[in-house]
Length: 77
Image 1 (cartoon, helix red, strand yellow):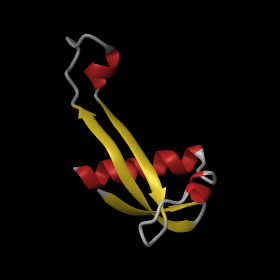
Image 2 (image 1 turned 180 degrees about the vertical axis):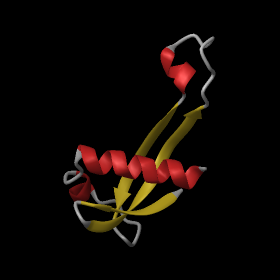
Image 3 (image 1 turned 90 degrees about the vertical axis):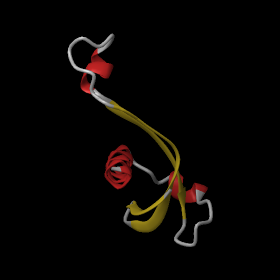
Image 4 (image 1 turned 45 degrees about the horizontal axis):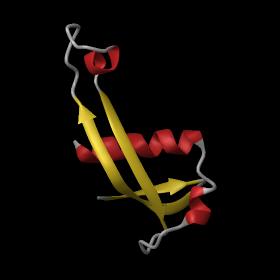
C-alpha cells in the first residue's frame, strides 16, 4: 500500500512493507502492550513517481516517522 505524505516538507510516498495491528485485549492479556493494543509499521520512502529515495530517508526525522506511521494507521482502518 502506498500513502502520499511529506518528509522534511518534500512530497513523497510512504510504501508500506509491513503492517500488523494488535487489537487491545484488555487487562487479562499477557503483557501491557497486548492489553493496550499497538501497531507495527515499517515503510520505505519513495519519490512522487514511486522510485526508492534513500536520500529522502536520510532526511527522515523522528517527528516525521511518527506522523507518517499515524497516517498509515489511519489509511489502513
